[in-house]
Image 1: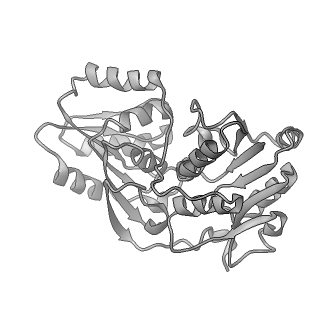
Image 2: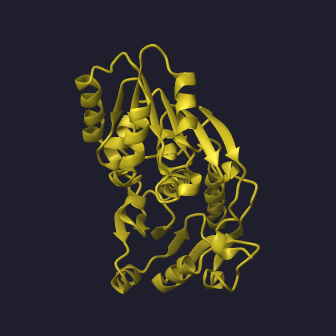
Image 3: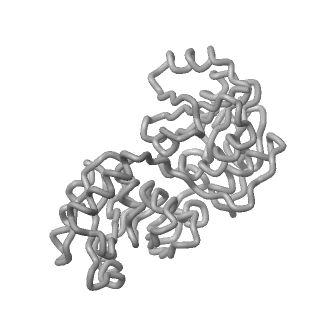
Length: 308
């Protein structure tokens, strides 16, 4: 059997699909499971793992033609999926069974009628559980204790180990922060709030690791300048970043993909700052977290563009 997973919403959303992907691999160990990622980083949680066989990224019409030639039996669009682009893409790829969610709005506007196997979205549950519900469409049982996943390899682990050794952090209380929020500025809380939570949770031997993309260079340097404690701005790739985050004792963050990476670590305690997004949908999928809601959810469900 050939299965194609469609990941089109972001790194964090991909991580929230990981318990479903693990269950698919468990139930279909001999099947071919491929990933289509609209952007290459969306597939990073699974690259190098034994959960998938191939990764495809979007490069226009030729991508669709290549995927059609693979003749997939099943395609699964990860939640959230209520956009016409996602539904049209799945239809053009042409899998026999095309799994997605159904929503209370946007049936024609989003072309959702092009998908032929649906389960109703439940606005009251977490996105991980939304994705797990897709398993019901394949007559599979939902696992009781699903855990989110981000794949790192020995080289990534060595990078983190060498960084800690080089900077003499072995016996330090490591606090990681992500003060940015990618291109979605509305999710970002003020640096003063970050500093407040850093000061509240720091210990005598605490040091700070400041994470974020190249585009967030300014905000990373700004918070470093405002703090008196020893701090390091991390400049590396996503896999190495994940390895370092997994070594943090505490991670303070906006609602971002790095927050979800932190939730894949059993060691890391998380303080998640929600500033206008829906914590019931995208809170860290771990009991080792504290959620602080600074602004109530301002988003329509599940996309602004598909709700009147």
